[in-house]
Image (cartoon, rainbow, N blue to C red; front, side, top):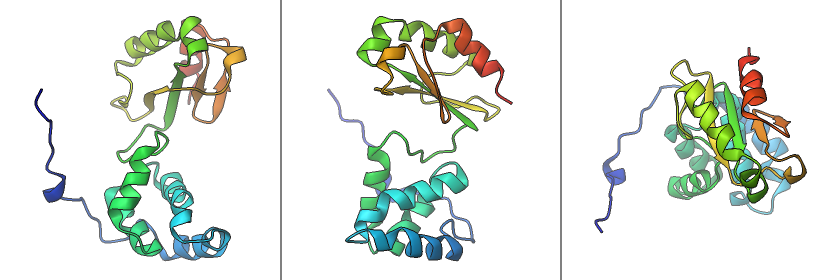
Length: 174
């Protein structure tokens, strides 16, 4: 089996002149977040959340800026960012649809939900619709096994789903 490699050592990061981690965000993070943790490194996750909340994803330039702000190598911030499924390093849709694939959801029809959405939206898990409206994702577990199968549509949990009622939920998104 061959190793698949990528040229991350020579990767060019798209840059903009204005920082993603603005002075206002730094002041706010310093006053409300960093002071709550025993080390600056420990506040990496809240810093990533703040950037993603503002821009809907975490650009590589922002990862470098967070590293500089916290006094960490950008590689450590990137490792943390890419470890968690909830962080996106590429633009995501206005709405993120997480379809649970835990054992309960799998037994009760998760596959039908996912295939129905793939067909309706014309995308696969991990992709975003061409209009930028919806990003489709698998979730290992959403913690709603009693209401399986379930999906999280942005911040709203939907339980006891069928492919039809999940499609109606998607159709109702503004």
